[in-house]
Image (cartoon, rainbow, N blue to C red):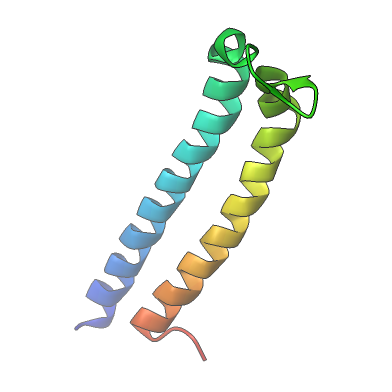
Length: 85
């Protein structure tokens, strides 16, 4: 595989990962915390309405988890393309 093809495929995969993970974060922060707030507020976690919890805590937790997922994905991608030492 040519170096240019390898690099291009690497970055296309990286962009796909970023788009997917940001879409997940968008769903948890915007959709659950704002759009679906009224529906989710019918449920509670530790005494807090679920819509409020997603807006205040849940989206932050999901974002941190997504950072670790991205690190894992990129380590595997680097290994696959031989960029890892």
